[in-house]
Image 1 (cartoon, rainbow, N blue to C red):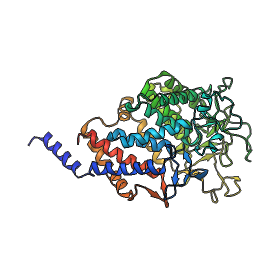
Image 2: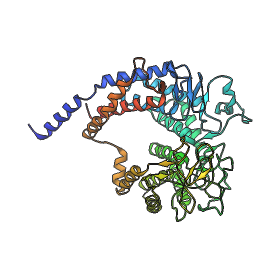
Image 3: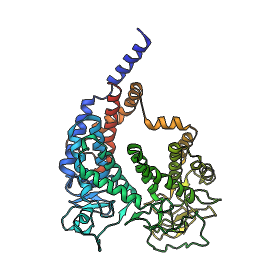
Image 4: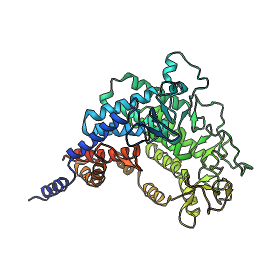
Amino acid sequence: MRPLLLLALSSSFALAELPDPAAITAAMKKAVTYAHTHLAREGGYASSWDKEGKIGEVEHGKSATLTSIQPHGTTTMGLAMLRAYQATGDEVFLTAAKDAAKSLIKCQLATGGWDSDFDFDPEKMKRYHLRSDLDAGDKEPGKRRNSSTLDDNKTESALLFLLEMVHEPACKDDAELKRCTKFAFDSLLAAQAPNGAWPQQFSGPADASAPVVKASYPETWSRTFPAVKYTGFYTLNDDNLQQIARVLFRAYDLEKDERYLAALKKLGEFFLLAQMPEPQPVWAQQYDRDMHPVWARKFEPPSVTGYESLGAMEVLHQLWVVTGDDKYLRPIQPALSWFERSKLADGTHARFYELQTNKPLFFVKDTYVLTYDDSNMPTHYSFKTSQQSKLESFKKQLAKGREELQQNFAGPQTPKEWASRAKGAASKAKKAAESLDSEGRWIKDDQIDAGEFVKNLNAMTHYLEARKKSGE
């Protein structure tokens, strides 16, 4: 028997031992049908529910009518449903994804983005100034909520889902979906500051008169929390800018609209400006108008950060891959050297390092007094971060050439490569199907959990996609 035929038969036998695609698809349909019929509110989803699926919960509340824009919720559940449709062609998934998109269209703010969550109770809906209000001629928000938030991947995740929906052929005739998505992107681009950054929240176009200056150390800074409004600061916190970059890279990839590449290059310029001078050539969590690191919440002091700085480097590296401009690589080696010399004794990094002295900063539990002592920290926030494995992975990416990285971004290409991916995805898909209960729910901590839904549905989708593209 010829070697190539032997190889093909061997691959086929191996795939035959993997989970039955029909059984995996059936589990996916059961989960999505339950979510769509029991959990959805106006097509949208909360972050978790009681076991009966009657009361939804989001970060700051719970009710029978709440939906979440912050992952995991409407945006990531909707995207997972769309991916499931694309892997299977089953209309059950597409119908649920379309309804999730309609939910986001209904709660889009007049400023173009989204709030953290939305309550579809008719009286509570009046608290928001919506795009639909603009259409009705109601242009003044008054005291209604109208700030689009980028914090914690809220508006970004909505945009990513809607962008993918717009480019799904089955949605090509949905004019309202296209209008909503265009309005959101136009608003996001208009909110980009002259120096290339975005704030944590925006309520309109950026101030065109804001200075474009290099980051520097303030002459003095308060060790006591000043309780100032921080939502307008240029914000890297929780990878805010990295999430925006992710959406813009995807939009440019799909549409080749030069506005998106221009915004990405401008964001790259901000990261170049925002890198602090020696002895700390990394980034802060947030900057004021004069590009000084500043306070945000009571546990986020002016400092450089051992967490978000890696995200800044990753965006710069991806910009180099896309553009070939070496200027985006220049900040990276000094930053990596800082990471190496700033390790804590246990090999981790502090979330915060004092400006110029580079001493790790922590807070005292309950009192939130700033301290160098890590013996009694609050537990709700990561004041230490394990970055070493991510740093090593990033260094490996740096060692590769642009062409190889571009091929890696494209993913598997041949049936053999897809068969290998199917084998790698099989165990997670099998576990996801087996952990689904008889009702079609994934339970975590005695609740129905949106994060579990997204994780498990995506695991099964990735497996089916790989099986299909392997030719099996």
